[in-house]
Amino acid sequence: MSHSPLTEIRLPDLGDFHDLPVIEINVAVGDLVAAEQTILIVESDKATMDIPTPVAGRVVELKVALGDKLSEGSLLLLIAPADAAHPDLAPAVAVAPVETVPVIIPVPVPVEALDEPLPPNEHTAQHTNQHADLHADFLVIGAGPGGYTAAFRAADLGRSVVLIDRWDKLGGVCLNVGCIPSKALLHVAKTIRDAESMSSHGVRFAAPQIDLDALRTWKDSVVTRLTGGLVDLARRRKVKVLHGTAHFSGSHTVTIDTPQGPRCVSFDQAIIAAGSEPVALPFLPHSDPRVIDSTGGLALDSIPERFLVIGGGIIGLEMATVYAALGSRVTVVELSSQIIPGADRDLVAPLFKRLSSQCEKIALKTKVTRIEPQTDCLVAHMEGPEGTTQERFDRVLVAVGRTPNGKALGAEIAGVTVASNGTIPVDAQMRTNVAHIFAIGDVVGQPMLAHKATHEAKVAAEAACGHKVAFEARVIPAVAYTDPEVAWVGLTESEAVQQNIAVEKASFPWAASGRSLALGRDEGLTKVLFDRTTKRLLGVGIVGTNAGDLIAEAALAIEMGADQTDISLTIHPHPTLSETIGLAAEMSAGTITDLFLPKR
Ligand code: NAD
Image 1: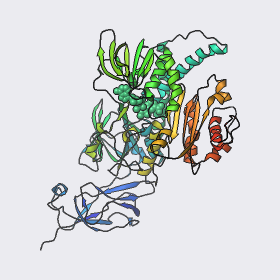
Image 2: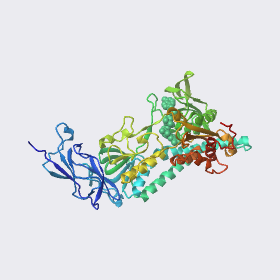
Image 3: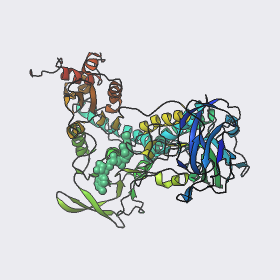
């Protein structure tokens, strides 16, 4: 009988780190492990460190237990070579009996070390044999709200961070071509509409004169102020920023395509925050410059006379609001039977009514089947309840959703699982299936919202530094910054019906709010949903001016487990729109005096 040669896996020199407790053991006796697979995780006061096995094989004996304190040379495992049934796990080289193989693990790099990049090819990646131009203790791919938050949080926790983005400016889609420029333009649209409505209150303004260049310059200045602020925040934290498109080239390396040529960066831990892209419809001529996405819409090159918006979701309606106020004749085409299909029907009804009066048409249950480019226009072929129609437009905006960028990074090369729809699955700590790589934001899926990404970012950065945290938000608010705004958080009424959840509902009409009437508006609504038994708040929906700001109170109330009494007895300032949340709770409790409700 012959004995399999065994390999001893020991902890190598960790620099200044000694007596590190084992916080996780990822293998058991009998497991087959691949080379570079994490076998256990140790923790210092600064970070957690994944300990991979340098060789593949079958675990024969575990020499450590949870809580054991490890230092250089501690024996971790005995491994036998993989059997013939698993040739893929076979060690690359023959192993001698009881050979000692040091584990190569991430060694934290002092912050100062990343102030300047190392000259090309001076530094060798620790986990591959590939030469790296730079080594990052902590790498973040993508500098949108998720990525920069993760980078800054990690830096604040003492890590030396490299932040990579494909664009010259930090801030990602949200700051550069999304949330922020759209809010600047929506503010302009609201001002135009408010000025118009003043004529019925006895104050008349002349028709607005739009100086498109000045408007664009102002919008861009808002963006530049914020993105410039990020550069300063990164610099103060000694976060090294690289510009170029990153692709994984190994489990601990990425290659970055920069204008100066490819550069290789090795890393100990990474966070993927690569965001999402607008969905393109395959049957549309996207190469025609008159067919644009939200980025093209926000660029504000011109104000087209006839503007078609495909998609009555948040982006489509925000853009329709802007362009209609600037003077375009806008048509919105929406596939489903209501605008913003994720929100309750009663909440979007006031928006539908007002926007319909500002647009040429909002066509529901309608789809665009073809766009035919002609020299002087784009002919849209549409199918809806009224049959097939054709209409001419000068510009077409496609806003039919966004798709995550998980497939664009070569993440699979690092061993990261990417779903067929481009999302990267993560656990509650935002950790992918590869223990030292995390993912956050749009790339992990819906809801694709900046405020979700920033919270996930903090969890990921803290978890990577060994904190015992998880993403446990009960609710994530959603807002359409249209006029009126639509905002909702927690359970919607449609979800309560679908999921058979017994709720007590109350809807406070803003026609009874003095503040709303003083603003010249009466179409708002604040709806609260309480658990019928416990009276705990489950969901809130608001449509009306500033709904997006008002919804924050509801989010806090749900997170704190507030009930009907908590909210109805909280003194809201008068006269404010925030009162409508307290008044809706009073309606539900049967204590309201601002309305007359017949006894139930
Ligand atoms: P969306 O998913 O919110 O809306 C897309 C809309 O297009 C849906 O109503 C859908 O029914 C419709 N649609 C799909 N295919 C269609 C077709 N062929 N013809 C006509 N209509 C069609 O997507 P969006 O508005 O593009 O926004 C993308 C993402 O960005 C969303 O996840 C959104 O939450 C996020 N976002 C959020 C904000 C915000 O928080 N204020 C702003 C902008 C975008």
